[in-house]
Image 1: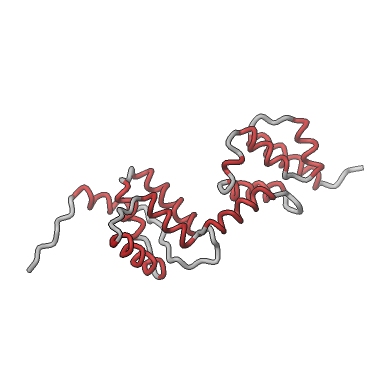
Image 2: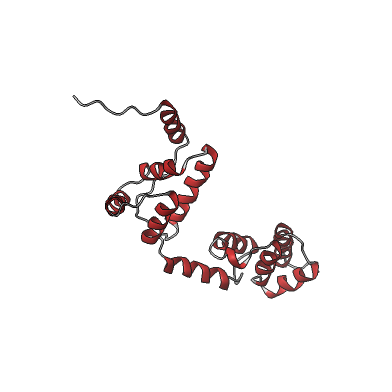
Amino acid sequence: QPRRAQIPQEEVQFIRDFKRFGPPVFNGVSERPTAVEEWVRELEALYVYLGCSDDFKVRGAVFMLRGEAVNWWESVAAAEDHANVPVTWARFKDLLYGYYFPVTVRNEKRAEFLCLTQGSLTVAQYERKFTELSRFGIQYIPTEQLKIDKVIDGLRREIKGLLVLKEPTSYAAAVRCALVMDKCLEEPQSQ
């Protein structure tokens, strides 16, 4: 009877720790095009905490695939193995995003961020949407000041005009002021 390869005790403990934190699964089926990106972000937060090696990041992610995503990985892994290409974490993410989160969708999200305005949203809703989409246009807001300018620029005119005069020096201050202004504008004027 063939002997199974022994897994080093250190790796066994690492796998236990990984599983104990309840890493998210990805089944490859979602209505939201950002689902895979959110899954990777959750895994990466766990990987940072655990201090994972590049190799374990790939193996951990593959371990958390289910359903259609397993079928995708098996076909990709076979092709990569045949081409004798090592699958690093960066390569895994490129392959995963290429299939489940294509450039066209990322470009749409970037355009949505660049065109984002408050419109009929409350300031709180607008800020949540701004934060959600900002990761797709991070190159357009590389400094705190550009981020402040971008969020202010998308506000409704009556809030934007007042906020520009306040000259907020941080993103948090800009949002805080906008929230207060929004609330004041919503309240009925007392006679």
